[in-house]
Length: 161
Image (cartoon, rainbow, N blue to C red):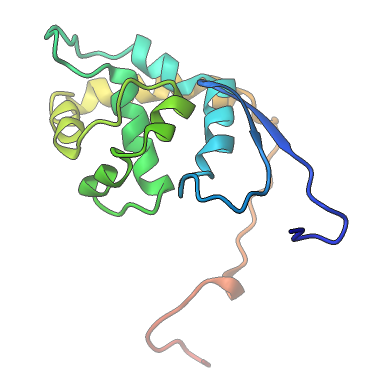
């Protein structure tokens, strides 16, 4: 079955779990197929590896989840329509998520909360700022930020509305 009259090309993404080819299928595989391009982006920019290497909190327990798994799980929550820490649990049963992102496991909401509670505000701000430097450095010298207020939803009573 073709969705587009000219057919669909395969999309190829180099992810942390290896090269993934996306194409149309009638099979139900995973509801998180959109994670494939995210994984390719995350692998290319390397921000999660950088965060894991430079974490200011030393994880000494043999049972402690790797920092990489924690920050990836945290980032996945809003990407997969999560609005609370507890929504990360939606992805814990899908082995495809871990495989695509090169994670051992999607960690629980409690693990994410405990991890961030162990960070001091100053250390965490510096930690994230250092990891984001390569991304900010890749931006051009001149940026034009434009905001079209006509497409923003407004509620209440505005003058002239």
